[in-house]
Amino acid sequence: MAISTPVLRAAFAADPARSRGRRFVEPASGSRNDFRRDCDRIIHSNAFRRLAYKTQVFVYHEGDHYRTRLTHTLEVVQIARSITRALGLDEDLAEAAALAHDLGHPPFGHAGERALDRCMQAYGGFDHNAQSLRVVTALERRYARFDGLNLTWETLEGITKHNGPLTDRDGRGIGRYAEKGVPLPILLYDRVQNLALWSFASAEAQVAAVADDIAYDAHDIDDGLRADLFALGDLAEVPLVAAIIDEIDASHGCVDAARRTHETVRRLITRMIEDVIAESRRRLEALAPRSVEDIRAAAAAVIGFSPAMEEADAQIKKFLYPRMYRHERVRRVMQAAEGVLQDLFAHFSAHPADLPPEWRGGIAGADEATRARRIADYIAGMTDRYALIEHAKYFNATPELR
Image 1 (spheres, rainbow, N blue to C red):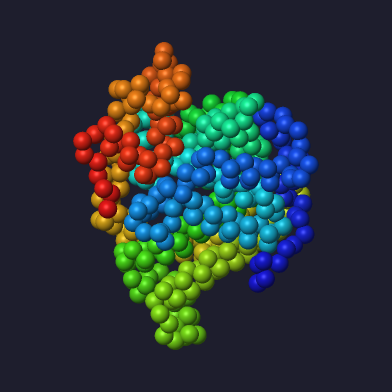
Image 2: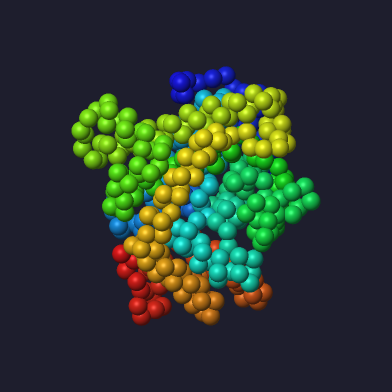
């Protein structure tokens, strides 16, 4: 399958010329369409640069070749563009959704998210997806006329619905939000600019989401092998990966471990991309959408893995969970990292005067929930190393996280 060959633009692709626009009206650019401008604004944001020093799985000082949030994001962008190009979708919109999908992640990866969620339980909790929306609509302050990046409706939709619809038509949370409800920051912004939380996002946003899954699977295998958390031979229990390794050995015989690993990861990414393209074409042919609105109104996602690849994806995650994410070495570091963020939250809650001047604004006289959200915003924006520096300023012992 020639997956990189450009195809004609699909009728159901998002069209920047027909965007629902920005919250604050701006003059059109003479050189870039609106979705391309969104990409550029995200790339030039402070939050995007900070991703270079935010944990994916391993903290930043454990090695130069482990993924950070930034390198993971760039890999998601590359995969997303490959898929959108093959399906005739808008590459810029897919890139914008991929670039922004992790902007709200706090330091120390999911451990940091767990810590902030516990700290914020009485105030609506903390959700990195909702925080990404806050970053691009309120927390970035670069423009004279507005807070945030003033991205197009379509990009905001892609960020908010990264994992699909959030509610049913009656506004009740579904999926991961069925029990606790939709995060308050999303609900509050939705009142300002209706993001149709009940519908699917564009096909481009759906591509960004599946590209995230592909990047996680392939590159966490790569990082896990690099960290010696498991060996390539252990992957024999994952049929798809085992078959790829057998193919490599049959074609190339004895190659060094580094090349064998890279070849495995490279072929895994290709297999998963090709599967998404083939399965998505099948779904799109069955739906026969004539516009992006038909994609949003569909009863199910139009972009995704085939049933066989869904099973392979589940097997990879089942393999990685105990051997990597819950490995004692990783778990010990992440538990200590959670403690760092909890300490910082408690300190700034008790001593708001220690917040930087730009973060103290609006704290005085604010209600408890507003103060807590402001503190969570500040901590979530920290890099790993800045969080440790701040912790060392206020506490006698700061873990080394090694």
